[in-house]
Image 1: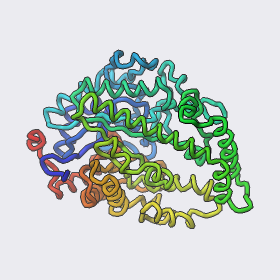
Image 2 (image 1 turned 180 degrees about the horizontal axis):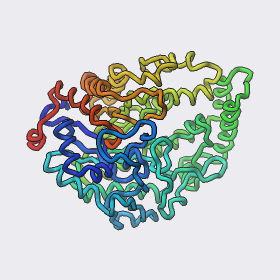
Image 3 (image 1 turned 90 degrees about the vertical axis):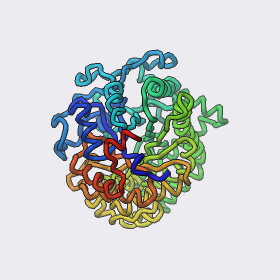
Image 4 (image 1 turned 135 degrees about the horizontal axis):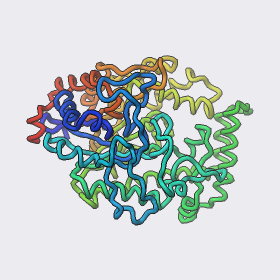
Length: 482
């Protein structure tokens, strides 16, 4: 579908607190009239400040040029009126937000009528994992009764920090969340984000692999997998990762030793494949629930930038496969923030299987493998990634990979939270060039991300200028008519 002035997809991710802080009418007028936005991707359930709070990097970056300039006393939860009938098949029931600022309001009931008056689309957005996600402004505590009973179990038998997505109660809880949204609100679709680390990911990051809870063990047995043999294999591979991270030397170097250990223990790849299948199964299940309840609603995937910064993940998550359970995809490309994210990703390789090489030696090869053309690794954090190469390249890759089976709406970074004072800063020009690069590469829409509450309006103005030049910034009358 070619975007037209009468029906573009110009979206923005926005948290409930922005509507409370600034007023629903005021926010919608600003987004529509000043910025040309016609789709609201609202975070309706989360325990992450990045999704439902104010700017989480205010200590480093100050406050944006709108909203309330004060920390948000966020506890997290569901910002809807929770309907118990959708959660009879799970023991997870008490998860309504207790944030005092929300005072029991239902954010969709509050926003939808006024958005519809303006002809704006409504797409609730979810991200998994929900809890204690480093760098995402996590709530200090998750006060959901029984949730600890859903936690993963790692190789060492310890309960881990996230619920297991194979736990039936946790999985059915997500089923209920999606059904509740689809059946009870006048929405246009759902956006789902899956940002889980695989067992191999975790070992490279210094964490013991999982999950070996009873539910994962049962699923493995049903697939004909010898769980105890897998655990024996993991102990040897996990021992390698501990040694390599500790600086132990190997006769043939770390990379060859990794291959040697892996070839002796192929069972970990069997487990990696099972984990990957089950992770994608959840995506597919939620897609199916949306379509069964209302075939006219769209289901979009918010796709992690690690999928194009890590060659292992890139091999695991092909675009064409994802079109089997997505009407559109939104690749995350937070240009100014991306250098730090990429450098961190390369650190996982540099601290483990590529430890015998410097980043300056192996990153140029990684750039070629991943199809990136960015600043040298010594400069990429400060430079960020260039919209004309990075955003354009990732959009072109997604368009080519989806083969016309799903639309591509690029996730344009606007003031994505920085972690370092020397990190590249978002500017109106970066946003302007990112929007132009999206449409030049064949993208069919944009989603300003990650959260309006953390964005500067002056930077969003860069996107509005690009839309005007493209003829894709409709007036309010044109939006309402569509």
